[in-house]
Length: 414
Image (cartoon, helix red, strand yellow):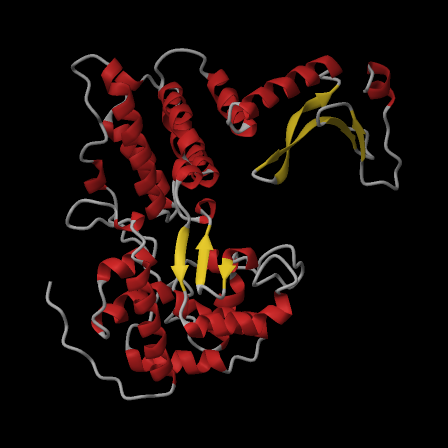
């Protein structure tokens, strides 16, 4: 346990990067060679270590630092991110009362953020702080005119961020929807109609080859890729399994049942809301025999570790997102096909060329779709049908890679 005397007399030798003096329950004082002293609280979230800055000494004394630590610890025990809570409280302190845009936006944000992923919550708060609060934050909600909001959105467009402008408008719309029930009857949602005044934005699509002959060229190039066994195997598995790049990169040996030809991706790794990640079912991916053979051949190389595709610098982390992307460029396909594009290629050719059931394909892609009876298709595994599908797809890819004649089936009409 530290004392005031310890804190006051703490120093760091010039040769050291820093000195950390531990107090208790994760609280410590960090002293730099220059003499600055800062309080930090160390904690763990989702199995990873994090730390939270609690202020500088002596502005924040030992007693105050312990109180701040205890408050942060309480937030964490309630399932709230203490760092995120502090950011919101800091912003809220600038406008402690009234229905200014900032006050209402932060109140709405505080209710929504616990349901979001950490990255989405952080991005939304950053967009408020950068694109809306500087221009509208101190203005009363009832007094803001549509042209004021439009002017703020145009500032975003002026820096070329058309997609961001669209997202910022969506945030503003939700803030007004949240505020209106407490406003007088004459108030309206001023965001209505503003989208038409923004530069049209077309969402980015991932480049994907859907021509069978050209896809065969890609498969042959990947088979002889010289960049290393790990990346080459990831390249070859990408079209066979057609899962999201992040899931393939993070694939762990414990998730695989090679005898049963199943890959079980934990819900926490899936592209879902925070609640769905916590309460949702794992995504089960049936694997064709070709994929199982590739994984068995890789096991002697990486099977001693956690990740199927470990990073070059550290086997405790998965390989980088750039590994496969760079390989595609090295093979000369980087501009016409992306790693994520394998999903679109599979989705398109499995329907157009093999006439397979689109609903089962969507289930294998982990897309949220519904059948004619209104039930969520993803909740029903349909593993037998999906096993059959993925094997047909893998066998078809073998034919393309060998240069077999490509016979297009008649296009199915909508």
